[in-house]
Length: 211
Figure 1: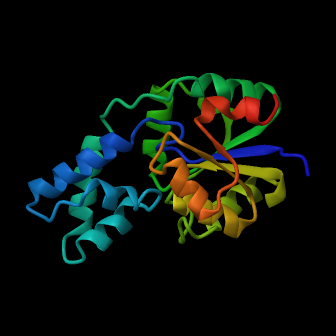
Figure 2 (figure 1 turned 90 degrees about the horizontal axis):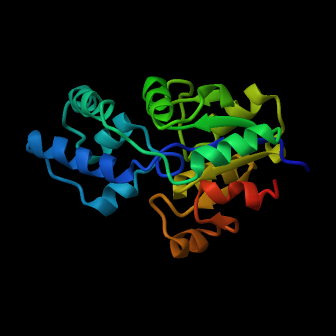
């Protein structure tokens, strides 16, 4: 079936933000005198909404206080796009693909950082944030909601992500999955998960889709 839409995760896919997220997460934990998670532990939470990650790491701590502190600092960070990714989306949009976002972030944060990184927000037909569904990745609900709003069958859609949760969500939603190597997972890790379609970065997507 012909691919008509591409759904993107944000962090580690469109934005080079993983290092910033990890270091800020550790900084806030340190400031509150909490156990500081390792880089690996934080990477394993990629795609999980912030509040849920906080509950997992520190079940007895004030989730809202940590989240508020993190978001106040994170929203002002300068986050760059990956080389060639903005141009790749421009090409994909001009080629007739519908584009969408599915992310565990808040909508305001998604839009602010994408816009500042040079992405034209008019390119995206829809944005699904953590505010839009009760369940989040690896649950398929956010991707299925995106398909519904795009008025497309899952088989007509590709989801581009970088983590295990992205892959599991795409698989459960029955959408095609393409992994990029700019995020939290190595090629070896992705292959062990069973991921078949792996590209270096979003900049390779037009070539992968032959446009």
